[in-house]
Image 1 (cartoon, rainbow, N blue to C red):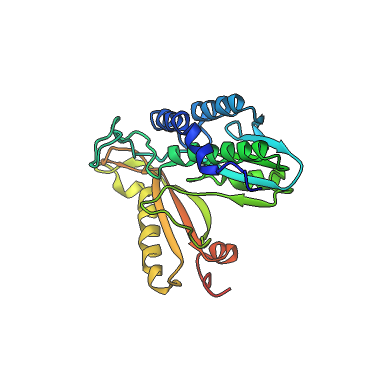
Image 2: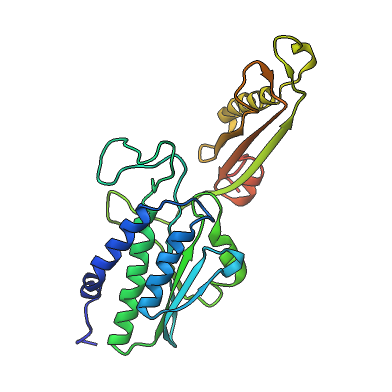
Length: 276
């Protein structure tokens, strides 16, 4: 195969279109499982590339799968495009300057991630076709990487069953190959129900649900000393029970994410996660 076209030249030939795609997705940040406009942009690009396309895979409206080529091995290239809450940011500025106060934003560069992953899929498909090599490139648009585990639903649906190799990447300040080490995680929401009352006139009649959230968080923080070094616990208060301090909160909710080296360790709250 001495006359094979270099893959880099195939990437360069499509670079401008995919940089524009990345910029458009940057300007429309959407949270996990809500990436409707971003998914439509990527589906339109796959159609223009001539990929055979499916949407709504595994019951996820924003999942997009495209495939090109025939025969040979199946090469899966994974893309993500969900944003994070509260990370709105003006493009090209190296200081905190949100476009929208408390708006969503691509803090992890997922606008780049999916566009570049699809560009790689297009370049590999071009290379296979130009050089008469059998093989299928499957581009998997995976929703909700940040906080929803969209890939798990694709796995359950069988999208990876016939895949020979799967490739992913992530924007970073360096170019290199990372050792594939990650932590399993479990996410749980805890709802507390109290007894509302007027905090000044009848505080003795109330039972604060938000106090329960605070007590839980304090207790969990005391656990950190006794956890394996590679386990993690994170939490965020989803509902503090209102904004009026003179009302005893009758409801509150906190979300916990537990990370550990194994799924069993995560389910056990991090205990022993590094050693099983």
